[in-house]
Each structure stands twice: as structure tokens, then as C-alpha cells.
Length: 77
Image (spheres, one colour):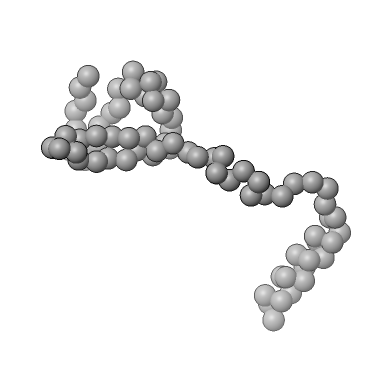
């Protein structure tokens, strides 16, 4: 497969490569030079690293609202 480097040093990733690597818009690529060759690696999003980072469950809306108001008031003082 071939692609052309434009005057802005941009290139298009061939569709077969995008499909095989499951790339989509806003994905990140890492470029490296290894032994005189250019190697491109997809940076996979490791969303599972954030597992249990957000607490879920029943909440107390009134208490949360009051706490937010208190914090806002303190910032203005």
C-alpha cells in the first residue's frame, strides 16, 4: 500500500489499515523510527483503567445541592 505526503506533511491512512486496526476519528497514533524505518502504532484507549473511579448509587440531592452552594459561597469570599 502507498500513500502520498502532502505539502503540509499530511497523509491518508489506507482504508484496509484503518479497518484492520479498528481506527476511528480522533484516535491517536504514535510515530517511531526504528532501525531506519518508520513505524506507526495506534494508541488504544484504556478505558478500563478508570473502572470504579466514579462512585455510583443513591444520592442525597438536597445535601449535594447545599454542599455545592456552600462551596460556591466560599469561592466568592
